[in-house]
Amino acid sequence: MTQLRNTSDVPVAVYAVSGDFCRIFAEDMRGLYLLSFLLTGNRANAEQCFVSGLEHSIGANRVFKEWARSWARRTIIQNAIRMMQPTRQRSASLASAEVELSEIEAKLTPVIGLNTFERFVFVMSVLEGYSDQDCKTLLACSRTDIVRARLQALRHMAMSEQTTMTDVAVAASGFFAQQRLAAKTA
Image (cartoon, rainbow, N blue to C red; front, side, top):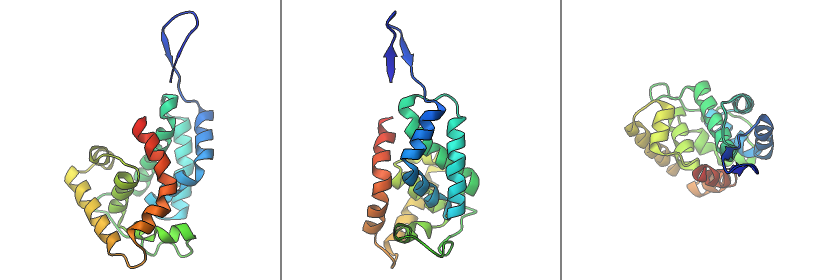
């Protein structure tokens, strides 16, 4: 957002401040936590990722206020990448990582059951709408790795006996649809 000063026509950039990020994390707590959970695969890591996402957002370089929501989501993703270090070579499955799942978490079991790298690619590219280029840059791999991992994730989820892709899409849509729109327009 650009504001004009009364004394001149020079546009002044408005930057997000720590209060803006605190408000965003409070308003979007459920969606940001779910993003953390889907990426990390368990509650303890998700909580740590969420809290460090808030801390990093507050202490980040200056960000335009209009981009603050997208920046918060990207910070969560970057923290999850640092925490989980998803690479094609180190990928493991977390299918039995959570014993007690909430109703929404139970519907997302096929996503959590993906190996780490495929889960990151699926969440980032399908749910968050990141381009293959952004995914390959953030995950430090090739575009081919991204395409293969996404295809493998979609195959795995399509063959899942526990739920259908429709269940996953419905469970995740409330958390991701609005934010994805904001990310694409930022």
